[in-house]
Amino acid sequence: KKKNLRKSIKAENAKVFIDSGGYQLAHGTVDPKKYTDKIALEWSEKNGDIFPILDRPSFTLHLKNDDGTPKSPYKDYQECLDLSVTSAKYYKENKSEGTTCLNVIQGQTLPQIEKWYKEISKYQLNGWAYGGSKGNLGRIIPVIQFLIQHDEFVRDDCKYFHIFGVTSNESMIYFQ
Image 1: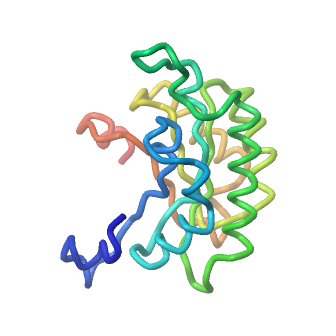
Image 2 (image 1 turned 135 degrees about the vertical axis):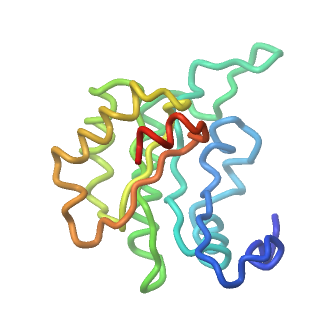
């Protein structure tokens, strides 16, 4: 909702990582009919230097609200994947020249990660972000290994790897 985030956080002379809002979509705190790829990309480009596509995380599919209704606005893993692939395509085709944009890989299991990668890697961007781990190193390391095995980190245009939702000091030490 903030029109000039960079100025409000006093980061006019800093490199700013902007989150796309996928987490908020997955939790149903943002209306998926109103918050589109177009809106997310335009806001991200205006307010940040590095940002991921607007992914549709699958990790909330099994969660319920207090009233028993599904937390996620998506019906299943395939819908999350299809919408995320559409987003990757949109960002690839519409991002401004020189923009640093990350593709997103999701999945709780190796077969899910492989399926997601197979579809979304058709739209190569400037790096990767991984979500859905909840800080669990046991889920993060296999994704890193998977991307290494697929030569993602040797591509000249693959400059960054971001892990969503990891803030513990212990995790930071392992990643370094």
